Length: 307
Image 1 (spheres, helix red, strand yellow):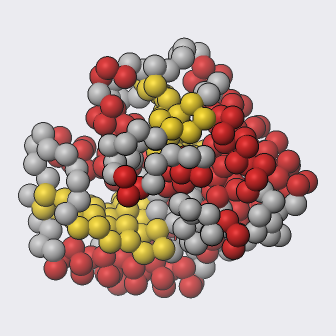
Image 2 (spheres, helix red, strand yellow):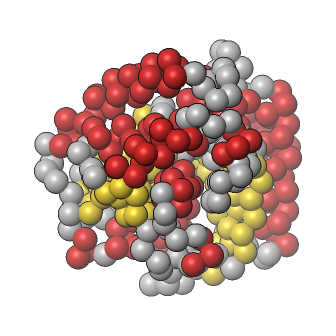
């Protein structure tokens, strides 16, 4: 069965087509994405602006047409934090369905964390023991921990790299005062869940998923993406702290010149790094392994499991 999966994230609209086979791995045979930065197209009331609705509708239509051309027999379309938190989400979803025929399923933050955890567990297997996973998206931070395929705890906080950049930074580079104030805010938000996670004990393996963590690992010396998915990549707390001291003094344009930083995300890597550092500190994690599988793979694996 050829499965098309459309992920409407807070940064990108991403379509993958997979020849899904029971027991097989969710490697796409086709991969298309478009940068949208939807979380930056929310107005002061939290609604997706008309421009954002138009861009999102066009992107969904293009993805659906491509899925048809690829002869996908099944098409799953879902949205995450930016749409989930939008005050006009229902109207936007109805508009998209009317214009494109695509019904977007809005994942809850908990389901987003659970499905990402499933992908991580399948990648590392049972021998990893208890896994704690962190995933920084454009709109939210997902945290999960557990010893099975279903996590014991799965939480989502509105601490995405794009969201915080949009809401907090009004200069480039951000002022030292803004950085410090944002640090305090992130710490306070994480304190809500940190004790709950720590009560389950130390993880056998701490993992980071998402483009943000891959970029941070690359900036601290991990292998480039061209080295392939099976190369072990890590991010350490000391390396991350050193990186933050460096990139907070740079403009977005200068950060875009760094190897491994895409121009589309150079403006939000500072916020992403602050969230990563705070989350690792709150959960007493000194080193993360970077997993190449995340939410989309979790969605695909769950669908394959259903048969």
